[in-house]
Amino acid sequence: MASSPSPSFLLLSLFTVFSLLFSAYSSEEIENTPLTITLPLTPKFAREPSTDPMVFLQQLASASKSRAHLLKYGKTSPLKIPLYPMEYGGHTIPLSFGTPPQKLSYLVDTGSTVVWAPCTTHYQCINCTISAKDVPFFEPQLSTSLTNLSCKNPICNTGCLRCKANSKNCPKVCTYYLQYGTGAAAGYYLLEDLHFPGKTIHNFIVGCTITGLRESYTDAMAGFGRSLFSLPVQMKVKKFAYCLNSHYFDNTRKSSRLIFDYRDGDTKGLSYTPFLKNPPDWPDYYYLNVKNLMLGNKILPIPSKYLAPGSNDTGGLIIDSGFSYGYMAGPVYKIVTNELKKQMSKYRRSHATEEEIGLGPCYNFTGRKIEIPDLIYHFAGGATMVVPGNRYFYFDTEPTGIGCFPVDTDAAKNLEFTPGPSIILGNYMQVNQYIEYDLKNNRFGFREQKC
Image 1 (cartoon, rainbow, N blue to C red):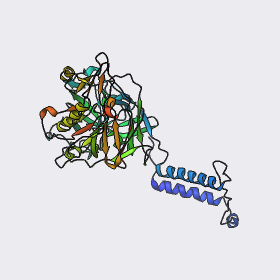
Image 2 (tube, rainbow, N blue to C red; image 1 turned 90 degrees about the vertical axis):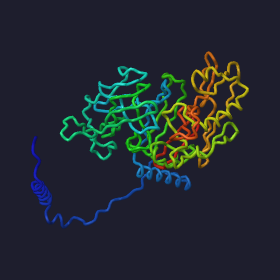
Image 3 (cartoon, helix red, strand yellow; image 1 turned 180 degrees about the horizontal axis):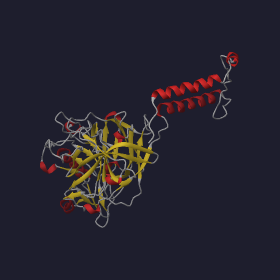
Image 4 (spheres, one colour; image 1 turned 45 degrees about the horizontal axis):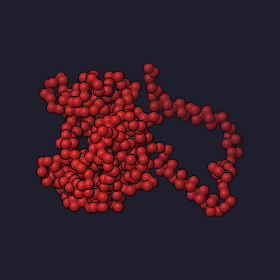
């Protein structure tokens, strides 16, 4: 490899070039050169301007608005990627990490914050309903753009593992242990290239999971929560949005879209409500300011201590794309289902189904017209989300004609409070709605839309 020239040599070369340029002109030519040059300036329009003064003014305003948007936001357009419903109740997107890119499916989870993939040929899954050999995994040794995130890096929130000073096997990587309900994942962080069509994000922090615990699906995880490690935060987007397809826990439905948006401002037709300040023990969730819930035309008498997060880190409502049917704390669940039973009293209960699946109430709709009251959420700022019965009831129409209220609960424990939010609005209630997380303006937007 050739050595670099010294700074003094570069300065001498530049002086020589300028000397040769100026010596090409005689002193007489320099003296006769005018000190100012005048060029004609002609107005130019993208299209022929209108002779109507008002229309011409509208054309100028439109051009100015387009120019202002370009100067403020640049040419960055929203990034749209396919979003697939899965048989286990989640929704996945394809992501490609590494050089050359390795594509895997990642579960979209707004209730967690880390992006990780099953990793290396040594990946194992303990007490899982799936076999580790059936799990697609990321192979670090095949990538030329990969580096390990050092445990000494300030962003590493776990720090370095304690090792003896003379230990030769002390790991220098940043490790993690993450819990997901009844499951968990453990591994270490990588800095890797993330590829999208026409766009590559370098030094993206992605987890290399070596061990899974009690997992029930084969997909990797894409955390979208409120953390420096999450996918939208690392991508530096101002907002992200999705529209979830309806599905009955199969992999056959066509995809919808997940949108990463670098632009600011309102999205047409959305109702907005602000995100709440997170409780200290739950910094990663998206808490919403819900004022009350209604079932049909009946306001449910849910105490405010369950609707807003309290000083003891309990209560409140979060929105979660990774939770299928959602959750209600025992006292909330009892209020909702007691009213539901009153309004559904004309249908025959299916107690056998309730005992079999551990959820309910369930009803036998065989040969009957199905009429289920809307579940309505009233949020701060006047935003109202109406969830029709077919978006919060699960139906098994063949061959039994059974429908159930499948929201998870801990009502059997008879506890006034449990740690964390009292209500989780799951993805099944978000179907056929355009859902937007506006990170820049700290707000949540939605509208009815066929996905």
